[in-house]
Image (cartoon, rainbow, N blue to C red; front, side, top):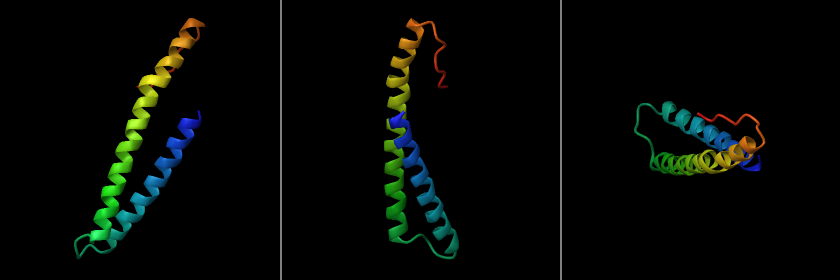
Length: 81
């Protein structure tokens, strides 16, 4: 559960940053994005890729292991997809 909370907070932070970046770029539609905006975009893409990898690991390993334990106890498993 702790990992989920961490991932959720990261996702919220990234969404906020992305919204700010989109607003900045939209506000200056007559000119191309600044170097700083491009830099922020690249950093956000990297953070998103990292978060997706963490989520994938959580779903593929941790939830799978948990489902195995549930199955041993005849409890319905968690469906992730």
